[in-house]
Length: 203
Image (cartoon, rainbow, N blue to C red):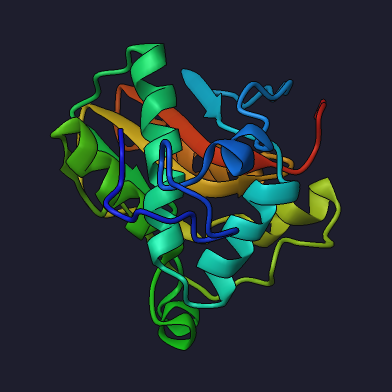
């Protein structure tokens, strides 16, 4: 898949694939080693490690308003979903609380989900809602992350099979909580795709 830009936004070289030049794309580890044991999750796709070029893309996309970088990330994530041959009826995303989304101006996971859904000709729906404004997960230990998210979400609409889109996975606490409430709501199958992970091995 190719984006329309002729020049790589990171270095100015000629674009080859996914909106990046051959050199920058080659610096992204698109075959990361990872292990997450998340109860109830049917499949997990992690597209890269949170380092180097991918880390820069995510930070600029998430915190610096460079929403066009989301298209690059979404193209890479789409390829991974196609490789896995996942054909779920609904693409969804990790919700933000309205306070944080208002401060940032957008939910980065929702933008990724909408682009991926468009690429795959699938529906993108708001399946989940965040009920309270939790602490940032970065810096919290695994058990503290789980407690921070307990009862923080609800299912507000139904689909039989879903793919949950998120940006970065660390311990998997957020996805574990969403998967749990999805199963409780009768959603039959939940997969998840993340553009990167912070650790090479998480037990």
